Length: 117
Image 1 (cartoon, rainbow, N blue to C red):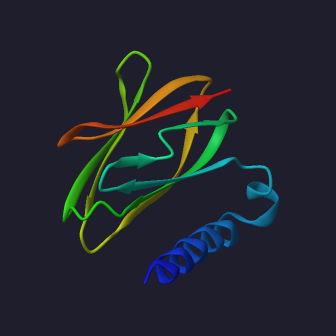
Image 2 (cartoon, one colour):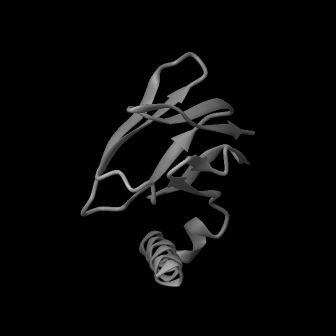
């Protein structure tokens, strides 16, 4: 079952690469983050500035989670509800250098620190 999830993730990333075209995505940084029962894994990540492919998989066991990506000032960059029928959020976001925090609305200790350089 876990192997099946990994194949689905790989397939999703490959589809995004194909959708955006090889030339555009060959240099696009990506962050794959898993939300498990104990929080985000990895808890910290560093990626390049610019367009970033952000893929967050919900493996928490929660039927619905609300993900929030905020910049260092606390300003919301993205708020995304992820429901049981859609186990992941994937989007190309444009992030400038700085610190960002990915959280889940119902679990204050579930935090992922994202550094953009």
